[in-house]
Length: 148
Figure 1 (spheres, rainbow, N blue to C red):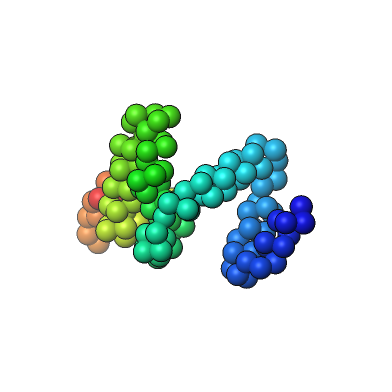
Figure 2 (cartoon, rainbow, N blue to C red; figure 1 turned 90 degrees about the vertical axis):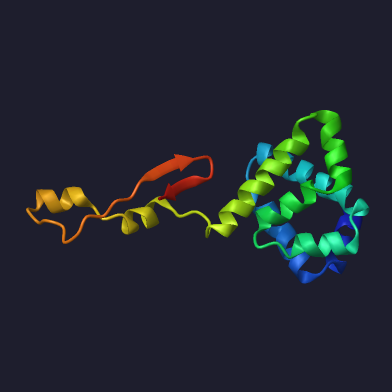
């Protein structure tokens, strides 16, 4: 444990805070196993990543984008392909979904959707008529609620 403590003491403060946050968030043995495996996967991927690729990944708009960039690395894709030949296609699909969401402004929560969509039923029940007709379609897909 001494070597790990020494490394953590030498790490940038932001890295030490992120490690502490992960350790606090992992409450049960399944989560702890997930954290251990995820950190080992990152450690395996880092040596093959150049400074430019690492900088591009770190500059992603979200933490999930960082993970996607990591998964796109050739060495990572090769290792994934060994385990599952369709894994690179899955990674490309995840990246495409992230790009579409970012281009369209992301997703919204159910409470945000409720505020955006006029409640016509309330107007009818309360005897009020709408000033104008609002038409909105709400659909759910894997990425969340989409207002059209």
